[in-house]
Image (cartoon, rainbow over all chains, first blue to last red):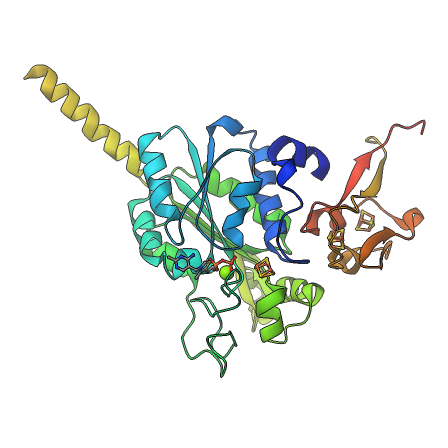
Length: 276
Length: 68
Ligand SMILES: Cc1ncc(C[n+]2csc(CCOP(=O)(O)OP(=O)(O)O)c2C)c(N)n1
Ligand code: SF4
Ligand code: SF4
Ligand code: SF4
Ligand SMILES: [Mg+2]
């Protein structure tokens, strides 16, 4: 399906063009997510897209599925409610680095810990885009933000390591440049019955780019190409991996899923009350 | 051989970011007054790189019937 057909099929066309700035990576990531849904031939009626607040979180408003645009940081909490109430839904959370790792960091670790069947796609542009460029937990040490005018002194979260350590059963990273790989990771994440975390590295030319002299949208897109290397290549050729950031599938280890465990309790109690 | 394709632009949605121009391997595209323009369509190899990377769904390959 080409882009035009994809837009007709899966987007709220009357809401387009989207409000994201020229060259913002978020549009490419939203496109990749929808391509993954189309490739898997999922029933749109059975999909629920949940987002928080941020430029990235606006994606849910453009996508023609069941959608829930919630409050800042709480997308995963709402998504947990949706999935618990209706486990037959395929629940996807679209979130930002601020949304899921600053204000929503607690929700992220506990949703991962439960291994509930939710696929999270974190649009990581290393900044709070929507509110004008404050540093986030993924802003590199030394980089600038409106709240770090002399350079950020915080250490940086590796979102994939965080999700994996907390209990996610599928974890991967790609970038807006590697949109095809990103699509594959999202497909795999959706197919994993458990908590999947896909970090989609994005770009915010308007705030992060300008504040950090990273160049325009094109220059930032080139960095999303040149600064990354697939983990499989890096393992074979460590010489090529020097000073690059790893991407690809990091972890894929299915485990018992939360709503299924919960269903077992319901079934057990139903049996007991029947015999009582 | 599949159905022939041609690259088309939705100028209403193009925000002139230049990403498609920069990553087209055949230098087919240009920005004119901050809107993408298919300057050398004869060089297009229909690789779909522009479509893959446009953040605004504004450029894509369209199937065209053979007799057009
Ligand atoms: C409770 C609450 N606190 C703060 C805000 C202000 N706020 C809105 S979006 C945002 C950060 C968004 O950053 P991120 O999630 O990285 O999304 P981006 O805009 O970068 O895509 C903040 C702090 C809010 N809306 N609600
Ligand atoms: S402010 Fe940054 S993240 Fe938000 S739309 Fe603009 S470029 Fe994208
Ligand atoms: S399809 Fe390929 S060659 Fe043709 S304009 Fe797009 S990027 Fe260039
Ligand atoms: S990538 Fe899209 S928005 Fe950017 S210049 Fe090309 S057609 Fe326009
Ligand atoms: Mg952000």
